[in-house]
Each structure stands twice: as C-alpha cells, then as structure tokens.
Length: 294
Length: 286
Image 1 (cartoon, rainbow over the protein chains, first blue to last red):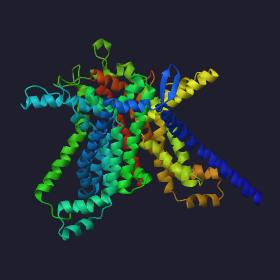
Image 2 (image 1 turned 30 degrees about the vertical axis):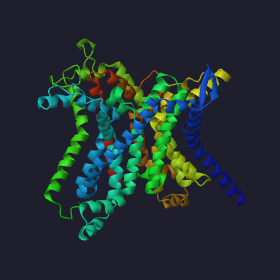
Image 3 (image 1 turned 90 degrees about the vertical axis):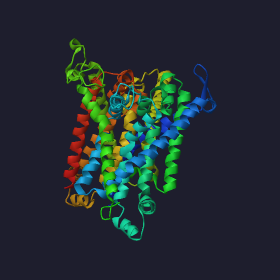
Image 4 (image 1 turned 30 degrees about the horizontal axis):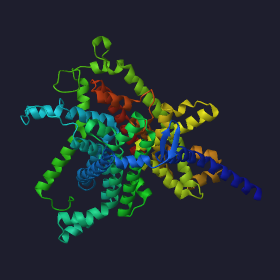
C-alpha cells in the first residue's frame, strides 16, 4: 500500500517539523542571534548621535585603560583561586560520603550537604553579611573573647569574597566528586596498600587519576559560575570588589555605553569558553559527558 | 583511607572534626539569618534584644514594617512567582518537545543541535542577560522606526525577564526529561500499538505517565531556578523588581530584619519543595 506509507512519511515529517520548531526558535532567537548582535555591537563605535562605524575602539579602550584589564585579570585569578580552594574543601567531604560513611549515613550526609543550596544565593549572602560585618556576629564574638580590642571589619576584603565564592560553589564540586569517587573500586586501594603504597602515593596514583573526570567537571562548572558571579563579590567585597561582571553592568546599565559593555561581555565569554575548552582538552573529555555529569 | 584498611586514631579524629566543621560552615549563615529574624532590634546584628514577631506582623503603627505589612516586598514575591510560573510552563513544554526530538527523531545536524542545546549552560548569566537585552532592543527599535510599532514587551520588564530565564532553564529541563525518556522501554509502546491503541492514546496513557516524575521534577527545578535567578534578571529588570533584585537593593542600603523574615519564608518554601522532590524520587525508585 504505497499510499499509506506516503501519508506515514508526510505525518513523520510534520511531526519532526513540529518538534524542531520550538528548539530552533529558542536557540535562534534567544541564544544565537543575540550573541551575533552582541558581537556586532562590540565592533562598532558611535561617531555622532545614531551614527556608527565599524571599529576596534571598544577593545582598544579595554587594553589601553589599566583599570579595565586589571579587573579582568584579577577576576580570572581570584576565580581560579576560588576553584582550587573549593576543590580542596570539597574533596575530603566527597571522600567521606563516597568511601567512609555507609548506607543511610552516607545518603543522609550527602543530602545535608545539598540542603543549603536549595536556598537562594541572596539569602546565603545575607547570612555572611550579618556574620562578618563590623557590627556583626563574628567581630563581636572576637572582641568578647578578648582576641581584638574593638570590632574588626571582616567584610570588604578579598578573603571575604573568596569565602563567599567557595561557599556558593561547594555543591557544584561535591556532586561530581562523589559520583566519580563512588565508582572507584575499593579493592584497587586495598591492593595498592598491600603493595606498600602510602596515603599520598595512593591518592596521587590511584584516586586522582580515577576521579579526574569528576574533578574536571566540578572545576569547569565552578570556575565558570565564579567568573560570572555578580551578587557575592559585589555584596561581600563592596566597593573594593572590582569584579568584571560589575564593569559590564556599569557600562551597560549605568553608563548606557552598550558598545563598551558588549566588548567586555565578549571578553568574559571568551575567557569562560577558553577555560571550559582547556579543561576538556586536558582531561580528554567530551563536552556533553561533562554536562551530563554536572 | 577506606574502612577496610587500618586507620590511625588521629586520622579518624581529624575526619570527624572536619565533617563537623564543614557542617557548621554550611549551616551557620542560614542559622544566623533565621535567628535574627526574631531579634527585637532595628538592625540584624548582635546583641540579642529579646524575641519579637514584629518583623513578620509589625505595621506602620508599631514603627516597624513587618513582612506581611511591607507591600513592596510582598509585591516583589508575587512578581517572582508570576515570572517563575511562566518560565516553568514554557521550560517544561519546550523541554519535553526537545527530549522527544533528541531521543526519538532522526534528522541531519542532530549532533550539532544537541551541542547547541547545552551551550546556554556554559554562558555566564550576565552575558545571556545583556545579549538578550541588546537584541530585543534592536528588534524593538527596528519595528518602531520602520513600522511605527511600539513593542513594549521587548523593553526591559517582566516578559523579557521570562525570556531571559527561560533561555537557560529550558536547557536543564531538556537534560532532565531526556535522561528519563532514554531509559524508557519502547516495547511497551509497541505492545500498546499492537493492541490497537492510536499514537495519541499511547502517548497519553503510556509514555507521558512514565515521564511524569521527570516532568514534575523539572518543573520544580525550573521554578526554583527562576525564583532564585539573579544575574540574568538584573540586566533585564524594568520597573517591577522580582524578589532577588529587591532584596539585593535593600541589602546594599543596610536593611532591617524584615529581610531576615522574608529569607526565613524562602528557606521554608525551598525546604518544602526539596522534601517533596526527595520523597517522590524515593517512591519512584521503589
């Protein structure tokens, strides 16, 4: 019956078109075209009201003005530092969850670690502000314990920003780490121990190579989120935060200099993409696998 | 090291202390926020002045505006809910379509499309925000100049916030729903078809009920993601501020404990969603 197969094929094509339409609209109208537009915006310069010419002026300003690229480099370095610290803090907990705690205790600990991240970042940052500001809980406590003569301001330091960033990123490191450590066979560790391996050498030669995919996935996600964070650095760092997303906001919203803001946005996107790519290359993983894991 | 190997006492003790310290680090900020919602003082700071419910029920007459008397704050909660409902509905609907597209359909360029669907997750939220803002403004300007049409929904405001949040929340919904659809045993559908069910009936009675946990789960996550979003929203906000933006503004000025009260409310709401999801997840596995 050729007739029926023909209608079947037509039906299939119609169904495919109907399923493709929302995906294409989403990606084209909300992702691809806006970014193309942003790129065009960053490569032009206003010469007179409503008159623009193609130019590299926005990027020249970025490299010519020390403040801008200093903030950029600073944001990148602090993000890298925050990522490393998050890994250091999260690894032991992931180890306890995956290897030491058993059954219910392990599941419970894992769940308890996830709970704070169901709460908005705004609320968590509010908590840190109440804890750390000059009239806040910790400075008062330090004074009462006689460790300081007067309350010290614990907000508005780089270290404060780092604490806030590590806190906010922990979840995204613990989850992939636990996943990759759970799949590590305990007998491998036992064998290494029986062959005379010590703690450090077992960690370096057995555990870390096995957990590498989880470590990479966690680091990529944490670095990206830290780089693009706005709330934590501006609230915990105050005027000293000098975070690059803040520069983008200032150009775009406060100064209404969209061309400059677009160039800044593209530089941040380029850095973020480069680090994701580098992380994938170094660990030899595929993008889609990492995203599934995270 | 692992339990089957000998562990020195100091290592066991150190592990215990570390876990304890870690949990304190995790929960201290939240506990502090909750406690100071009840402090009888105009600022959320020590010392403790006694217990009060003013920051929940206080009104102008008492000289303290509590959460339930703060029209601005209540309005922003409503705004956030409205935005989150739209984002959730759009994300789950489009996410389901995407899941069927990626798991069932065959077409050229599928691999590229699959990768593109993941890109919103690696674009910083601030940049998603500015790119959508710039593009929407360009389209609106174009329509205004050429056709004399004023498309207000493309100017900063709630519709643009919905679009901005949707642009990446839908990627998460797609991943969640696809993952469950992939594990579906397609012979169940074949059996139903063989028994004479129409395609629509199979979808309604077999496939969608199977997907239900993933649909509910992705709806809850979409709602939460949207409600808590800050970066993208900040760039697209118009005159009506959602809750996170409102709270941010007040936190910069140094706010009264009414913010602690609203935070406590948020914690309770998140806890309810989390517990329901975990319960459901456990039931589904049984």
